Length: 435
Image (tube, rainbow, N blue to C red):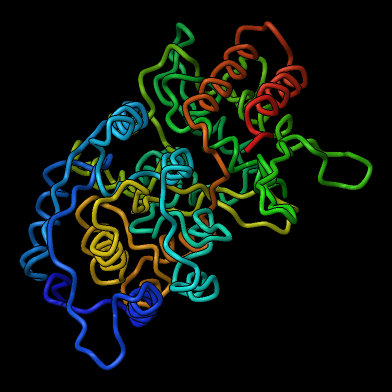
């Protein structure tokens, strides 16, 4: 089915849009409502060519609604946007990862809760999308999601007598030695998995925080008090079992670091190796933790590799099932010059047909529950999307720097794991407890 030929939005968002226009007084009862027309500008971190093509198709379907898109690198996005808004030269809307949306919360006009109630929102989108929800409405409407998965090289697993990739992290005690091959000089010619270092392991922050979630805790617990103010509490290392048996951050960090510790049986990686995805593409890495959308890139880089993806390993013995996520949303800004049109386009882009088209263009999937009931969706994608989670990371660059310092302090022998976890919590408290 050609998604660009579907000129309707999902029932929930149509109702939301109708209510919004009705409550705003722009849809007089008894008169014919006209669809808003005009041009809006959207800035985002998604590729220019793909998004230009997407919005061209959109404007071809909805005559009179034009979108001008500008790509900005993720690392430059916040500073560029803030500078532009300060001089009233900013866009009407943004499309960005959820962390960037949270970071810009005070500059965003939430999609009104009266127009799009919380239950409708939660029934429409997968649970991870609730990261956008506020008492005033959704900061952004989700448009795509990628779950964190485990890629595995079938050839390397078979070669070393491993029939299936691990389902639980504790299985690496047995699997890692089997999949690790050293040269006579002691360097790695084949590694089991890339964990334990910073710089050549993508998504270190995401991996460690996902393990924290699997251990039953969240990095920052955020709640709204009676005055409507957001209050944050850093709980990354708060004990989750009676008697304080397990401290999630310290436990997850210790596990992560053991893969680069020469004294451990799980030693299979170090900071001197090439980038993990490069090693996987070169068939020198048996298992690779990444995001589902990378499958296309891996295939393009090495068409001969026999690989697949499966669920991210879980922590045995816990009543949790969690993986990480890349979630993108579209948000209307307070400075939008035509909020009515921007809201209309925002709701359309976040509808099932159009978010499916957008997600497919960038190698992701739409964040709709309805999409997961479509025939032919791989079980790994279906299950992973349902359990994909993030955390209220509204200072992503600063938190990334904190994770880097923590990993490098441990690997450099400056502090032990417990001390590093304690220092990390203190640093995070200084930044994340005053929303």
